[in-house]
Length: 293
Image 1 (cartoon, rainbow, N blue to C red):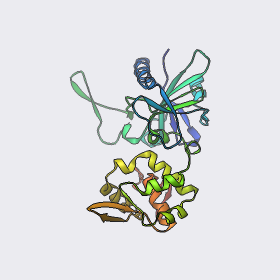
Image 2 (spheres, one colour):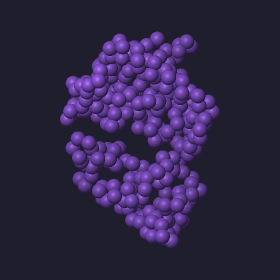
Image 3 (tube, helix red, strand yellow):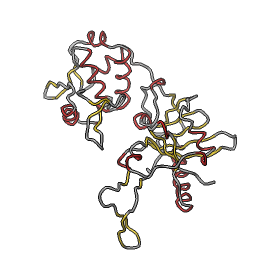
């Protein structure tokens, strides 16, 4: 069995495309991905995903009856029916994930997925070189790096993954996580980096959108993993309301007292803002609307 390599993109005209691999690269890829699959499958304890629980070592999150809306299974079954990847840097920026897979003995399909971002692109801008036979040679065309581990697997309707944040870059998981409850909202307001002057007012402002964002932020772990000075610097660049106060020598994020600024802050913390690598223009990711217009 040899595995093919596909890309899932954000281009609606070419949602799934196939890489044209040489025989030796395809053989190496097969061994590489099968080893990753074995490592991934060592995590045996399956935890049903609800948007809140973070898996420990030896645990994996799973969603039963996941809707394969992009029809990845069809790509595995009929690889020759797909268009080939456009070998251009512009197109590579549309790639959301790399995937491969194979047909099971049961007749079903197992899909192996890795999320993809522009850091994995070997660009034709500048001079890219690689070491071979004791010398460095020039890379003539655009290339990519295939990661050393899987992000997720999809097998007969069951999606399994470790990192919600990474898997969310590939799939829309919004219908599978639960909104934050009142207790969750209060727990959020009591986090070490958060300062809410009035929890009852925060609950009043917490509509369904706010509760979903709070659930996502708690799941992502961004408040535990990103220093507050870095968050503040990025917020300033994007003109996001990001007020901090100092309490007992610690700098804390102040929860806004109006819903508009609260939603801007939560959208920022959920990482819906980014800078386009091509135009250096600031966008909101769900609409690609230029900020300030």
